[in-house]
Length: 321
Image 1 (cartoon, rainbow, N blue to C red):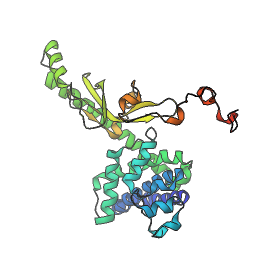
Image 2: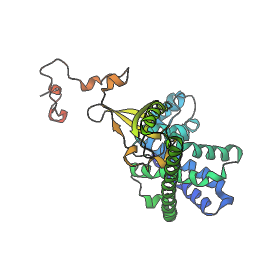
Image 3: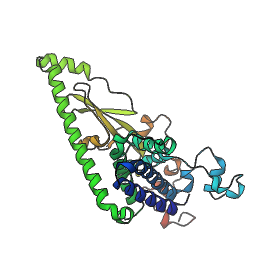
Image 4: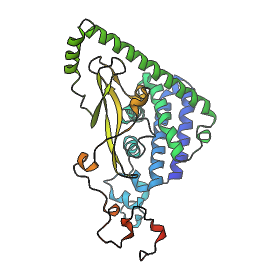
């Protein structure tokens, strides 16, 4: 549960993963397995810097006791503490670092499948090796920034290989997006090119009126392929940094008119369509059970300095003077 040890462990596993990857196909099983462990340990390192309890299996009370400094009350030794796995570690970190981490749960699936496949049955999808590997690299890069780890020290002699893999992945994502856009335009023309403008407008209004509906929230946006009504789909969260606001984080763009569906790396190549959006709705109207934190609400005491919006607690003593 020590953040420093987890950082060092992550680097060791990643060095072993890069070594295996550079040795070719015979070692690709080691590469994806070790890269998955490296990513998991760095995710846990970030959580442990916030508090060790954040990497503990929530239902294991003995583990929680050890993580919170009360191990003397535990009935099991610290060596048997149970921690979360890769998917849950990613889920917890992603809730905190939505803007920084470009890998969502769905994009992480090939990594988890490959790591678990090799660990439990010695098999993995060979066709997804480079995807798995570069996903780990793209997941780790922002964590290095958050943990103030110099990339050169983490990647070491494999820095140029890391840079090349990221470059190739970005290029591949752009090419794949352009293919999807070209195909969608051709499909749109095939479906509706023979219709008169007014007839086409009526048909499209009917076809595009329903959002996909498989995530928490969606918003209309013009389709970059055909110009019809498409849908951004994603999750929301509450940002209470200053005044509480509801923020929409899109992950997918879909258009039923031309059939385009963009997610993962290709989605981030859509420009400002991937930007977070502050929704024009009060948190209490959007989230049924949300209530403002009482500590930020002034009471009815006119002598209470916290009623003043410019009140600075460091300027007052315990008596409020």
